[in-house]
Image 1 (cartoon, helix red, strand yellow):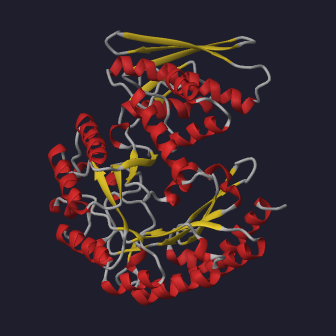
Image 2 (image 1 turned 90 degrees about the horizontal axis):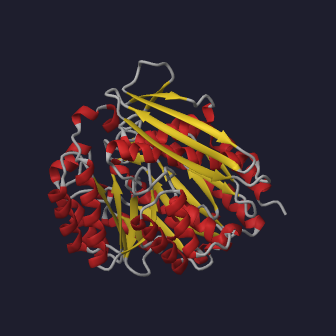
Image 3 (image 1 turned 180 degrees about the vertical axis):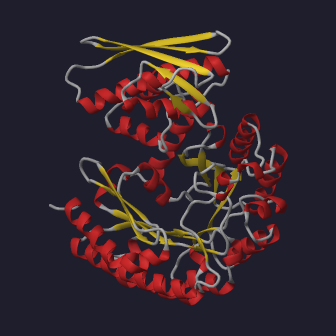
Amino acid sequence: MKIYIKGIEDERFHRPLRLIGNLFFEETELCFTEGEAKLEAEFSFVESHEGVRITGFLRTEDGKEYTASREQLIPAQLEEKERLKLVKNTLSYVYLTILQDYTGIVQKWGILTGVRPTKLYHKKRQEGMSEQAIHQMFKAEYLLSDEKIQLMKQIVERQLEVVPDLDSLSNEVSIYIGIPFCPTKCAYCTFPAYAINGRQGSVTSFLGGLHYEMKEIGLWLKKKGIKITTVYYGGGTPTSITAEEMDMLYEEMVESFPDVESIREITVEAGRPDTITKEKLDVLNKWNIDRISINPQSYIQDTLKAIGRHHTVEETIEKFHLARSMGMNNINMDLIIGLPGEGVNEFDYTLAESAKLMPESLTVHTLSFKRASEMTKNKHKYKVASRDEISTMMDHAVTWTKEHGYAPYYLYRQKNILGNLENVGYSLKGQDSIYNIMIMEEQQTIIGIGCGASSKFVHPETKKITHFANPKDPKSYNDGFKHYTEEKISILEELFAK
């Protein structure tokens, strides 16, 4: 959708306008030349020593006009960065109000377009704001629905129950270990994932670099006396490598990392059922790792074929029972709402099949059209459900999880997510993933090790975040893993300097 914008010359305001537009239209293009677009939006700013008043108009080709305005008080002593944030939020409020009137679509997340809405809830809580004041703020300033505010409240309460010391874990770290190989690449995926067949040379080289990173990072943590809260093996699919390679990798972890027996949680994604074998489960048992993921995504065989997952529904069920019989007592499963060709009936069937297995946790994703995915590049090949159907599927997931004893414990949102909804992790009591809480709420540093692994360095006092990413392809990683390890340790030295 092309929208002609008048009255906004400052480029710093273009991004919030585009993000709000994308909530209503598949792709928003801002135009600054009259005559190019079907819609015309005009904004006026009236500033005073007390704050700013923004008025917006939306005009259609047939002459209809929609308007809204909002006044925002801005304290005189506020820093420029915070002042700009308030003005952007006010502009987003006005624009969202206009587009809701024009389209008839109500955005339950209001003007919030970020990935981590519960992080804002935690921030206000930590600042001493009461629950009632937080709710009022989200409703009045961000235009959130009561439903979404209640969801965030429920998640925040659950997180503090699971991790009571969440606010004070900035003196510890968690570790993400990225293994970039999968049996095949899924159509919706943009994670660093390379088909493992025929890549044994690069796998061997990669694992050599990974072991080096684990040794050096572990040595630094031991010297500094820094504890590890959680370890998460992701990718890719970490169980794509052989049982012997897995065994050596976990042995390296135990030898290199400090105080491994006190790590609160170690997770290994075994998401692709076609990578799970008795031998690999034996290895997990050997190293006392019992939290894994086995991800069906859907229990419709035609869907699995369409999205490039080369395993059968029966194989998912078979491998789940195998893992359970071998002592895996904390299994997560992922489902995706809105996969190509699926509607409410298909998703209800997937929920019914999930009830037969009852994994300890269930993450319900809403399909997101990620820019680099095969699905996005070839959208014409993949027919997805309407916004109303997607919303109904999410409602069914909420009802189903509640009826079966699951509670939400983390959520995140993505760009281009169907229906402007969210991804929610549910778990049975006591089976929540601490790593998922830590990565979403950004209360501590996450050190990324391995190919495509991103590190988030969170300053223990200021909470300022510094990002650092290892390269996504195995060759670049193999060529420079020593350099990337040194860079991370340098950042850590500065971060934890006393």
